Length: 437
Image 1 (cartoon, rainbow, N blue to C red):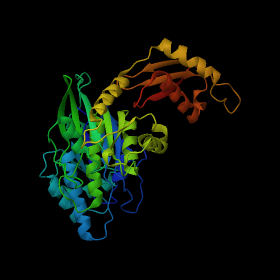
Image 2 (image 1 turned 90 degrees about the vertical axis):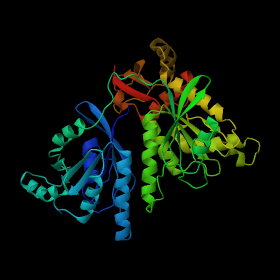
Image 3 (image 1 turned 30 degrees about the horizontal axis):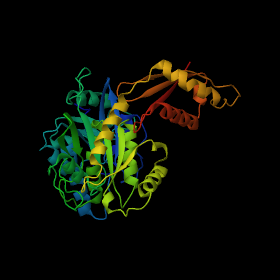
Image 4 (image 1 turned 60 degrees about the horizontal axis):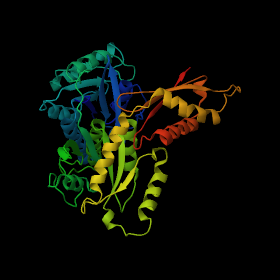
């Protein structure tokens, strides 16, 4: 079981991004009085009373016509109904009830998912009288809140948690390796899944977005069962381009969150693009194993060192993520597709690898002494005295040092490269934490 997903919806400029920032204790969503400021979908984590869930800020729209505006809102709600475990409808308590609010509410009332009406911008108990207009929507859960100052959010979060299902702390971990096949539409995700399985589990066409759902398939590989998740994602042809991207992003991100290793598929003729880099960053942020698979390699002219040149070009764009392995494949000819599975299995084992503390210190400390961290601004020497590895699901390294807050980012990257040089961890993001000795 995975952490619940909660989606914030509503028309533009009702305070969705302010609510997101308050819940996640961040400022990742841009807040402005101009409607439609949020363009990219924002994903964050919420902790309340020791339990965690995920939240998506869907942002607002500024289409060119009222017809497109209504279409965007309607499709956004439909996507939220399918993908979320609970839905938060945010309305503007100062502006009052609008026809768009009524239309969204009528759609939510048909849903079996928990949904909540948050009447925002009511900053004081006196202003809470404005909530009365919204009871006509027929919602069971109605709250007058202020996302700006946090008013009444505690009561709301208590109620929300009571309707969500959380994984038990002692819940048995699923031992199956879960591989998320991710990437932009039409790069060959379904073709790869079909080639691995040996039969057509997913419909394949040249039309981006053919796959209607994320589909879990079981690959039996040398007596081991591996779960493949094909994450393509359009349920129907939508009229608003931003909703197409939103729908695909929700599916892709959920697959990343629930996987052990994510396989990012690229089109050999297109290479690494901006959206691919965002997917890599999310997988790294979630500390998932990562592989880049360059599909349709059979379409590339075969020249001496073509693959090496291609790999070097991609690694130069990835910068800090250059530890992610790159493999060229063809889902059509089945070229190297099972080497891809072997590599994924290896990376999954790397995620679990533990280096004994004595070995870490015996190998790393002498090299650190040869190239120590730079001194503090006052000239005091910074010394790393002790290193140990912790973490159950991915590698975390604790470095104990004096004046550790002065250790610069470039030196932390040096330490990570040092660990990878001696101990591997190919394709595995790691966390380096610095503590007072």
